[in-house]
Picture: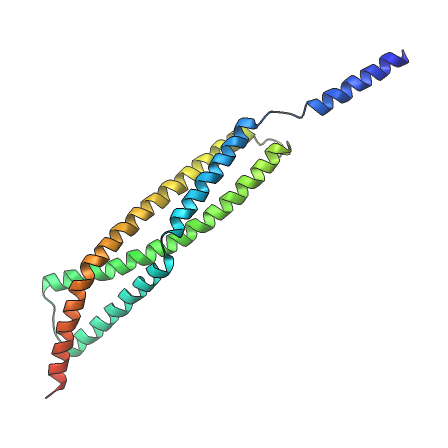
Length: 191
């Protein structure tokens, strides 16, 4: 009887040790893949060169103020095409500022999501998910969030590329306008 009792206790102990719970191998590998996607997405944001974006946005804002001040000083009016040019130029600065702000937000979101994935992975590996939390559903939810962030970063990259092209096209025209305006200012101040 004693041998049967010891055998029964050993069998229960063995079952407890080997039965750790649900196998989350697939989910753990999915988390690793999601972390790679987040890392890649973060690299895209890093490639934006936010220092250049900030500088261009500030330059455009300062140039726009300079132009407005001097136009008021000249008491001159703008023709439609020049007004449109200057409006597009100012809007380019707004787009640069928007991209910069969104890149900072997305970078923070990626850091937060990466920590969340680390925590989820830890909980899955240690079978320590809170009661009522489904590991598979949690990974699916995180996957959809990573997908949304990744697609938004790609959209933001496209916006930045278009903004840079617009800036490169507009800058020579704006510089030529500023030169004409400066020569008018010189003429007005000389008499």
